[in-house]
Image (cartoon, rainbow, N blue to C red):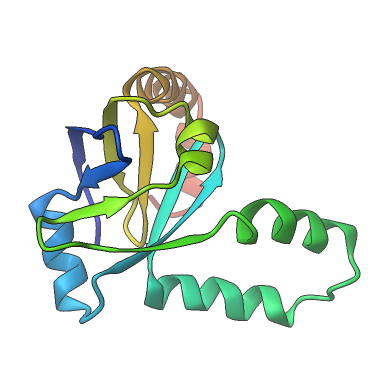
Amino acid sequence: MFRGRHEHAIDSKGRLSIPSKFREILSNSFDERLIITNYDGCLWAYPVSEWKKIEDKVNALPQFKEEVKAFQRVFISAAFESAVDGSGRILIPPTLREYAGITKDVVLVGMTNRIEIYSKEKWQQTFEASVKRLELMGDKLADLGL
């Protein structure tokens, strides 16, 4: 399970170092590849085994529904497979970097089954908004059993 926040820098070629804790998780799953896509103003990176679960669910949905087509056109079409190289880095293509506003400083956030990748500025905005929202959601979290 991916957890924690890690700050890194992306180089000019779009290579990003994966934190050692995250690399361990990938290594233990016997697959050091990530599927990276865009969503919610950041990038979502899944181990291939987790991504396969999403694709299986999407394939089971009615393909002519507008919501399904929109999801596929945004989330699935942006998917890019990136192997962790010998130096522990992944490559993030320009289109995904542009979508997330990633130029140099990056925050990788463990979200249990995926990693979210933010520009540092976007992460600060997202985190602050999430803190405010969470303060108002105590009852809803209790209803979920948390």
